[in-house]
Image 1 (cartoon, each protein chain N blue to C red):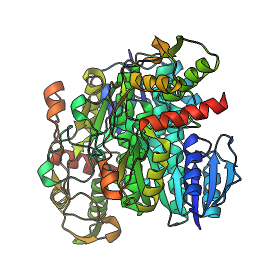
Image 2: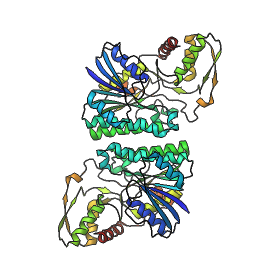
Image 3: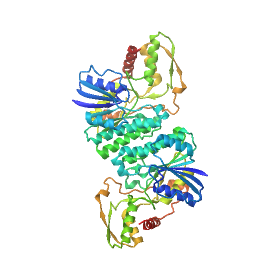
Image 4: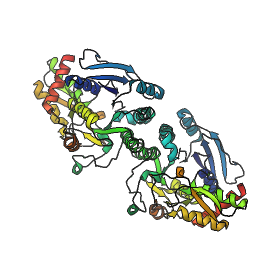
Length: 320
Length: 320
């Protein structure tokens, strides 16, 4: 029976990770921690047993007691203030809730001398502004962070390297690109599109108008169910000290995504650009290379974009 | 009358910076802050007026009130937990007292919308392990930090870049190599040599034994008086958003340094290696390139190694 400590448990990725363990009959004890309360059901699983606790990872003493009591085999460190926009508003909080919380976690594992494999989640934001000729981005591409959030993520990755080499901690790192799926909040672009379109359909509004940002940007979206299978693979088979892109390897125009959603829902919509949603310094196009995780660990991303979007539409239809 | 806020004021560099202002008749108001008390005289200067206050830069509110009241034209940010060895013992404290304190400072300047030029002091440690073929290290050399301290310094530099580009703050950065001079504590290698030799001479001990680390490593030492002239130059003429190496451009074997000291003092010594002082992962050789600061800003490093060592010997002779 393996023990997983999952930070940032109240987010949507951890819920999919638990479903992954359950569906694959991976008998496990899961300890979820988050600074926010958790709004999904923790019982009803057969293979896994979940315990949840509200914990502020900035509380070093509390982090130490959690780690020493639970003695996790694996830590899936999802906790993060992951909004780039927020990081411009409060860089201090962003830094503390990315880099400092991660350090508290590492120090607790070091202090108790545990054989814990840690998966440090990073971000494609670490690459910064990229040119079309750099695509798809491989792990060797230089890191040029251009937001406080991205700096915090790069710092986290650099600290991971130092803890692997200097303290022999067992850490694997990701640079995760955009992911999409059920339970994702509507502040994220694809969830926002789907929610608006499902509402229009429900209210039987033809040629309704939805509010968007720049529809001409290209992003690499991965189904969250593929993301959590990658995270499980990296926790159990990833090479210590290595960084892996987690991405689909494909670029999708936001306009295209919107068209697929309209087609599935069989409704027509018009779009209106909210200039507040257009970020001038945004990359026009981000596509990652997933060759490393595929070649080294045989990761497969199973879901097509149509499958992912259908799945999300189903989720929002039951919710609204 | 220009106003300089100097953090880390109780260290030896700030004292030389004040002497530089005095000697060059640069009429200034200096506000020194440090978490430790300051053990040198603050009066007796003609050109400058110094006010000192004990401040913990982690105290965000206090930092804000200092900055808004003093409204500095320049911030010389010397404060740092600058020991690599210490950073391995307490990475959290090291990170807080480098990166987090720097962020508090930047946020205060941003909050009050001040036209303040900030000099962010970084370290040659940011380069990490280097090969002989990479020397002398230019500013374009990739940063591969290998200690918690070095990561904290790289994070500080990355944050500086983001604050320049994202918030239009006026920051210049250094990567400062080893510096030496009077008032430097004996935990630093050259001061330690000189203190031991001056003691032997004073006690008239012939062929005494001094304790050293690895004498076969090469470091780039700059006289602190040249360092502070570089800092003044960078504060007043450095290009916003740019990073400058501050170094002599010359490599000195520690063995060589010890020989020069013996020659000046006219005593012979034997050395004994303390294996605790030998760091296995240390770079054998570090030499920086100072072409950028010399070519772009006409910086001159005036003092030869013999002059620097004589000056330090004088200092220790009056002290012991």
